[in-house]
Length: 222
Image 1 (cartoon, rainbow, N blue to C red):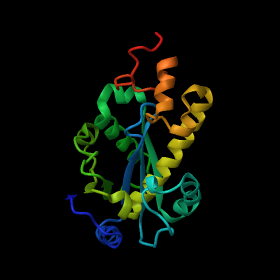
Image 2 (tube, rainbow, N blue to C red; image 1 turned 90 degrees about the vertical axis):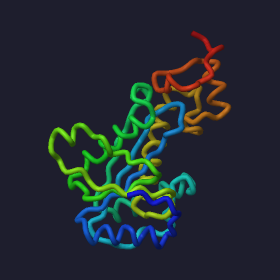
Image 3 (cartoon, one colour; image 1 turned 60 degrees about the vertical axis):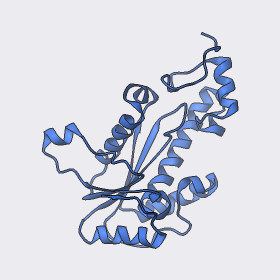
Image 4 (cartoon, one colour; image 1 turned 60 degrees about the horizontal axis):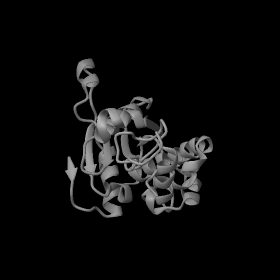
């Protein structure tokens, strides 16, 4: 199902409650890193088995400071039933495109849960779990999917997935940035800031850059 109308926060919580009335496990899913020039795509999944109020201040990770996201991690992990991450590398983005890489990361995140959800509520208009040949061939029951535009702001399970995925991806970019300091990934997280693009023109691309993207390398060193 696809919700194209913008939901309120109360309606987003009601959607989770209603889903829990008909499914033992309900999941929220969101991605980070879609538009970056470097680094992985990361998909976060969080689940609930029973409803309880989410931590105060929870919303879309992009609306929170880095300090606030970090502070929310422990309360979020305590709140959810389970959480997991799935990633797709820059090379997989080049090979499969953004949408294909998002589907890979989404399936990987779900596969790492101990208890499979009966329904996944995901942010945005696209069902990232459709056309899964592995599920079709194995006879596994695929979860129902609800797509909610703006869900990362109003559906708490999606917000939780967004925050945990963002914090973990930022930490990964910090570690990569220590090995490639010229690109300032600790500050830009792999996104196309002017400083990042300037470093690309000076130093060229790394294995962690998405080579199929427009990196502005026409005049970069070979």
